[in-house]
Amino acid sequence: MAAHFGGLTAVGSSPGTTPRTLREAPTVSAVSVRGLIRGFGPKGVLNGVDLDIAPGEFVALLGPSGCGKSTLLRALAGLDHDVKGSGVISVPDRVSVVFQDSRLLPWDSVLGNVTLGLRDHDADAKARKALAEVGLAGREKAWPHELSGGEQQRVALARSLVREPQLLLADEPFGALDALTRIKMHGLLRDLVAAHRPAVLLVTHDVDEAIALADRIVVLDSGRVATVRKVAPEIGTAVDAAGHEALRRNLLTALGVDVAASSH
Image (cartoon, rainbow, N blue to C red; front, side):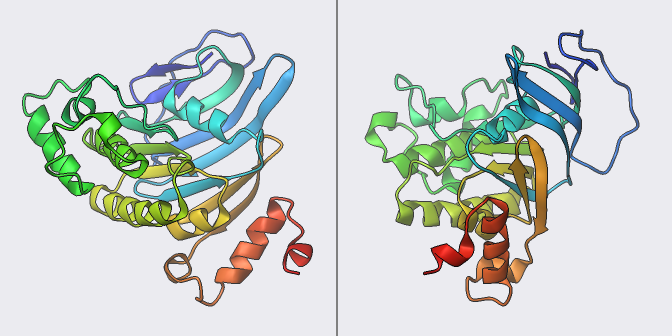
């Protein structure tokens, strides 16, 4: 069972133990994960994951279904209180999460959804600014059902970024969108991350999405970190850049795809 103490998540040393607060010297990492184990019943999902994410770094998390990607993200978000496990997680104080489903409240306006839970005296002004950043200026009074899927995800991004997170966790936020809308959302997310500079962990099944967005790509397999690859800026922004196809093939191979067979 995990518990958050300020910006630090501490977990007992064995399944079922009581969480404890850890007092450690600050590090240069925005996120630090050591020996993370998570399981559901007798089955292990994460089997000793170590991971660091630097401030402002964009990390994409790839892996086959069931390898533990969303379990890791939920652990970082502090949303896995009923899951047995062990390990130590250090995260910043301000963490925001964007899910595949925008999770907007249907009975509230766009502005109300963005300001949900904010206690700032200037919450409305901040929300209007965030909506303008995601291209929805003037839609503050609209209802969620009046928005397209892409627009709903823009509201979800605005809701996350209005809190100025130090860590943004994104669990396949574009998975339900059509291909053209996804490409547009990739550009928007790149711009927003460049402007706000949070550390980012993006869970995705899409190798091309990971290359297009991330500074570094981590592949999980059987609950462990199997492969880590850095993405040069020129590779991420141009599919015809030298090294792009080699990186793509390397990642597909790490995911168990027979690249030679798939190319015919």
